[in-house]
Length: 436
Image (tube, rainbow, N blue to C red; front, side, top):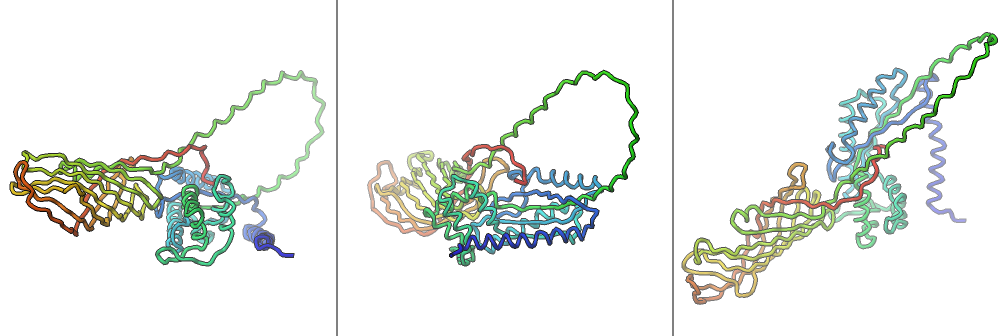
């Protein structure tokens, strides 16, 4: 008879629980003594943004954490029969980064939560336990098991429950072997869907506290004398039954919105009287597609001064932060332009029905302006452009003098862009407690 590996693991886990749970319970009874009873678990959780170890009180349900910690501490202080038995701090990260980065993030998040809790509570060192497991795979398995709409759900669960050798990411850093297996499914579509559904729920830190209550002394027996016969009394009319007021339905909580696109304008070009507008679409949490158009139909003061330009500049970007919102990025752009330029009385330069074209790389940084959807972006790029142009006399309807070609290497992009982000609104859901 062949026993499957999953059944062996389940059997061993059951035996370990059967052996160690009674031992832990006995150890607690010995430490506390027979006068203590009934241990209770209390927990709070804070969520973190991508690659962040700072507790943002405006993110998800973090605003209620401090209130819950203060309420818990006040209730323990007010009850002399309660003692704190143990405290555990846990940290975790979502699995899309390397093992080294995820381990650092989970530990730093755990330490951030510990500092915040210790600022509000006095906790003895000898009862504190730390757990920076860095990726809560069991939590991810539970999320997938409870989501029947997840594509390739059975295959995903099979990979999550299997141990794979350590693998390497595109930078050569160690990652859990389950990650590349998941990224292969549907050409990365399943990994993107898991990121969208679950990873935001795995970037967190937990504070778990166990308390015990002291037993009250047994009351002494009371001898009750035989009752004397009571006179007959008239039973009063029964009081009317008041129906309990039903509890109100929980208020819907709006899920965080996902960035969809940015609409932007380059302030430097606008200051030079070059009309421009751009849009940037989010492809994945790390990739975006940006395109900006430039149009300048003007003569400056007279016909001998003009800078007429029509250009578009598509660009693909890779982000190290949150695409369209905040962080550093690099891009690959392809400028294409038509022009008719005259800056003096001698010559006028015009493209001969063949647009200027080129290719370049850029670097930039974006950040939000306060808590609104407005943001600012700083960009600089260099690259190559092939320019073919006709040279005319610098008079009205001047004759064609010659045709020249220029291979240009140098700056190809410079901008200070102000943008407005349009978010993809998610469906609201009922409010949940932090323990869920």
